[in-house]
Amino acid sequence: MFWDAVVGAHSYNLYWSNTSGVTKTNGTKIADVTSPYIHNNLVNGRAYYYVVTGVAVDNRESRESAEFVVVPQAVGALDESFNADGVVIYNGLSAWGTDVTESASGNLYVSGSIGLDLALLAFAENGEPLHTFGSDGVVRKDIAGSFDDGRALIFDQSGRLLVAGYGLIATKTSTAVLLRYDDSGHLDTSFGISGLATFGASSYTYNGWEGLALDSAGRIFAGGYYSQSELTSREGTIACYNDDGWLDLSFDGTGFVTYGEDNKHDYCQAVAVNSSGQVLACGTVGKETQDVALLRYEASGVIDETFDVAGLFSYDFGHRNDLGRALVLDNSGRILLLGFYRGSYGKMDTFVMRLLNDGVADPAFSVISLASSTFDIEGDFLALDKAGKILVAGRYGNDIFLRRYDSNGQLDTLFGDNGQVLFDHNLGIDSCIGGLVDHQGRIVLVGSVNAGNGLLLLRYK
Image (cartoon, rainbow, N blue to C red; front, side, top):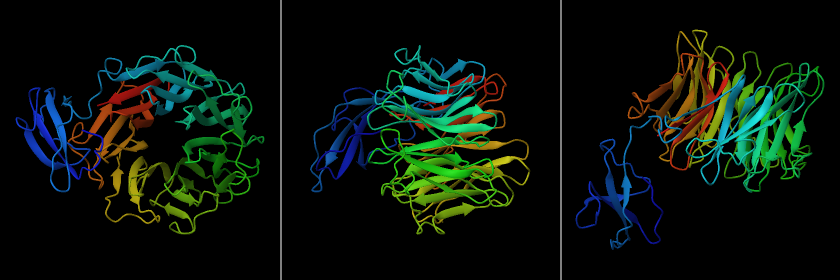
């Protein structure tokens, strides 16, 4: 449970009861607590009533807060208040979701693809389509008449939607795209060219964005991959855009930076901006077998040489196809890194590791590893909940998995079934690509069912 800080309070006392009307006099006291607080050993489905008091340094205690009630539910269960069963499916040929973001009013917005088009979908907090957005909650954008996909989605500081991805514009040629929409689903024509900014479109080159982030000045950072010509390999790329949709030329002189090795394919999968304004990018770096990569750049676009080895943390799991897929910064500035790699059995295994602010592995953290000898486990979603616990989700064979770990990397067995929940829709191939923790601490996952023929949205308590 959470409450707002009280000016002058050094700590708080919590009083609770199973009946309404709880006070300092009749309630059971839990002394010296802080927000957030977890009250353990409660019965699911039973109402518990609480008031909070503030305690000053000299032990003077304030009056009680307004009473509030909590009804605990099974942790990790699907939320029946979301479309009746916690599940939303938008059926359609070649329909899937890749990312989700939440508005200030609690509405959910999903990026992905429907048919051959880049797509945005909007849902009310209860899971119903948001009919005021686009056409009955759906916006589709055809970039150049072929296959398009929205891969990342965020709100900017003015409440406008930014979606990044790629559009296939010719045979073996794609361009990275960044679009901006207003809250009704209309393209913002003041952004780029008629609402669209493109990057890289040389013949026989592949270019695309996979991640988005904002800095405190409102600059937009897009991470992905870029080929300068058909004779060069793909390079990991981070571009910086101004609010008007044009590259910020103060960022390394060109508005973008690339990394990688000659004749190797390198990718950036996610970007983040830390409290110092430095830009972090994770993905893969070529070498012979492809290694996990995490780089840090100054706000000017110059590589931060103080970060691990000359600005680059890389890790080789010993086989091949190692990939950093997502990163999250905790309140201490430490970096959580999620990805997957080819394991010793030839299947894809998932990892989570934690780095200190200087890029060195945190010795206090137990590296998380999910492995199987019979099927792939590909983690795509990483987040911290409001209590600082680590959430990991992705594809578990043909199903979706969601796990919760404590802050030290140990599985939280109080969550779901011994730390994990699985989702299987009609025995088809299901996948999770993104997610978030909403304003109430609920977990929202986005992906697909039926091998990419139905966009999927899940919400867990």
